[in-house]
Length: 392
Image (cartoon, rainbow, N blue to C red; front, side):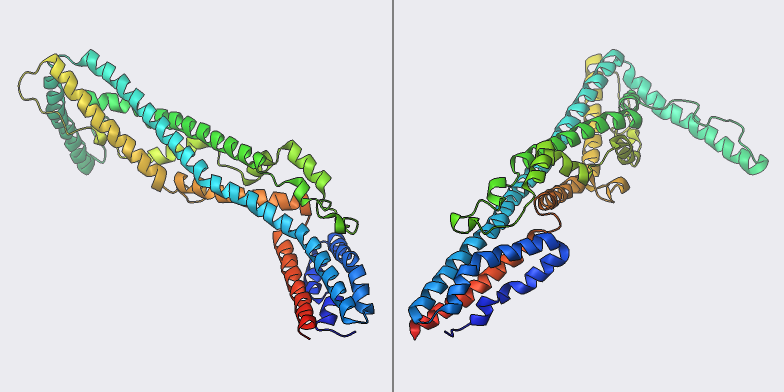
């Protein structure tokens, strides 16, 4: 008995293109998927071919519809399950990034505070009533002497081709505040301390992702070929490599994913690169001390602590700007902030890639989406045929 879309339904025309694509990539899997579907609809197709009356044809189309929907549920489970788990990782991504940046900022703030306290202690030891006078003398007299030496050397170079005085800075004209700043904010020391903070935060970031991936692994039972309805269970021939996947997941897929992405290492070099473009530490200090009369020891200490506060706060602020804006070649010409923000996307993509590889071999989610679309198209043929029978 003839009916609309008979050839499209019997020959499974909606599936031919995707079958060819899948078989060209993974012949065994593609053949199994095709044989599975053909086996599932064999009975309904025999009924369709042998139907002699309208009622028999209607029953055959209903059976075809049920069988196709049952088969389709398997592939919908695959795409739905992996999409759900991927979305959970995407939801975690901004949390991981913000927690990383918050940890770095909090630890760096703590480091800067501890440096302030260390500098306070040195100031308190040196904060005598005459320190203001000493700083003024060093700033004015010392600078004058150094400038004179520089001038002599300049003239000597012009007339004799060499400088007379080897060391141009013969007097240390730094104030007490500048001296302690240069001691405690030395680039080598600070680079080592901050690199330890970044390294630890990076490891914590990595651990959080490993844990998150581990608790969001796609449900193996839902992806199994044997999890669909009993109606078509005996027809399924697909091997989704569940055993191999279980072995990999047991060994720790999260670690495998993060390891494949490869988080940055060598934070000391990167931190030093950030600090190396800083202005001289002295420029973070308050304007040069000018002596205006005799001040008490307590007032001298308070004044210098205020100068240290201002200088360290500026230094701290400048570092945070570098953290968010300075592009580092080691990080792919990205700032530390952007690097870790983008890293979340890479980790999620790698997790999905490894899920696909462990479960489906050479196939991926796009192939199963194409299968889903083919099922929808085939069901449209069946529904159109049923509607035509009802209307006639």
